[in-house]
Image (cartoon, rainbow, N blue to C red; front, top):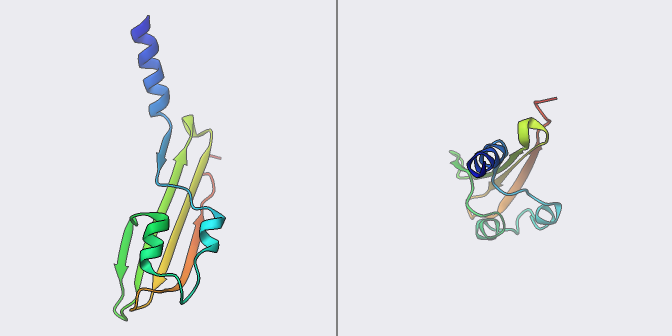
Length: 103
């Protein structure tokens, strides 16, 4: 019986998935155009999921967060992309929130 309960608990936990860390409004409020640096972004958000360099010298750093509850009972998905100038300072940023595809 103990093995069955352990297996059942493992299946329930495996059905819930989280990736990345959620981005808070307080973190977004700290991003200032022309002031915030790449190093400050890395300190606040950690290593980005993607980094792109454009032909004009700008760079785009992107972070993401996703959480799906048991059998799709809850869902959260966020994205943050920040454009940096050639000096590594913020030009602009974009946030994305996706709706629940299970409803």
